[in-house]
Amino acid sequence: MTTGVSESHPLRRLFAGLVEHVFYADMGLCEPDITGYLSDLLVEFVHMDRIFCLHDAKGRRIEEVADMAAEAAFDAPIERADRDRLVHKHIGDFTLFWTGVYPEGLRQLRGPARKDHLIDYLRQGKRSYAIASDLSRRDSQPPAAVLRRLSEQFEFCVFGLGLVRKGWEQYRANRPDLPPLA
Image (tube, rainbow, N blue to C red; front, top):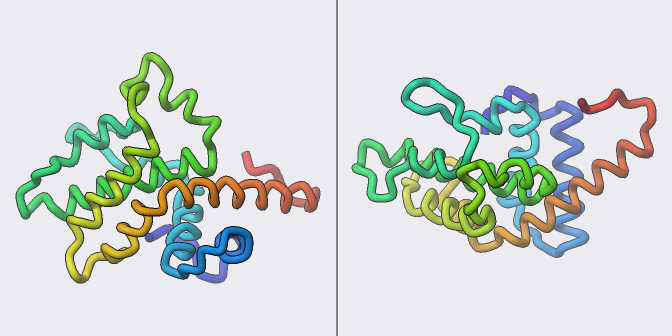
């Protein structure tokens, strides 16, 4: 992932430490590729423009999973496979982030007047990571195996990211000197 946030930035170190602690110590998932991916995801999604990074043919920001899925053709020709892989990877990231870190935001994202109202974010996230894995080439980053594991362990990762959020909320509560996040 490309965030522009340096490897030594305190936010990156904070997220990496929290993710590693939760997944290694609290949950017993000792998979550095997965924890590294999740840490990078949190850093990447600090910027709202990365959460909503997909745009349609007219340049409009795509904000709903239903529209994201429409951007990727499941039986895509070879020349579209790379774009479709990125779209499905992003759908996996998007659904994992919202269901794990900010589940209270799902009420708005899946409101009755929205296309996503009928979309199961857990099922769609698992499916999208699996498709992205299948569309991966040998040199793809992240590797197909990481995306496959994210698909297989999606609910586990959702739960873990919820614990990561609690960890950073506790950290902030213990540091009144920090400026507000919003």
